[in-house]
Length: 179
Image (cartoon, rainbow, N blue to C red; front, side, top):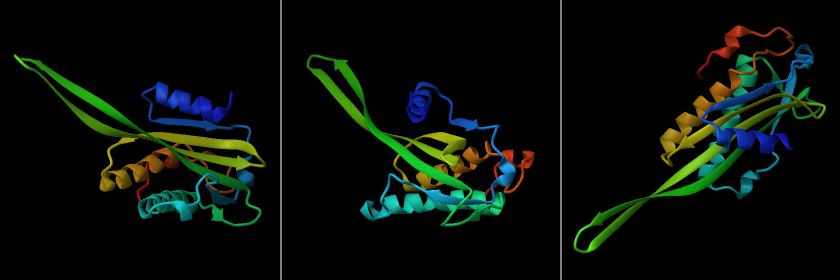
């Protein structure tokens, strides 16, 4: 089964917010550089809000990789490819209120629910090194989205305990570092 499908099934089937995988056989000491990619999204086709959201995600990822973990961002021949994806779904929840009076009165309210997952993957020579994801369930208020995305990426990175050029896990990286 495709690992992404399995991950999505696991995320939507559980209440767990963070899911991660770390390939212990990787030589983390050999990794000094990375390249950030999102192969599924063309920013020129997005709305201003969509572009702003992706810029926020990329900014947070780069902060954690460069400022916190000392990796170098390069365009050509990186040690690691850091791929990110925002998988989303919108659904409507209908709540009905039925009242039995002489005339039956029915009212209903519709609430739009945004379900999203932020997925980060580190690859070396097409081999998965690390994967982390966070299940976002939120409303459509912009300030809440911005805060939630920042917190989600902070939490995902608590599952990646390595600095550039080091095979030793750094326990200080398992705490949230705010930008």
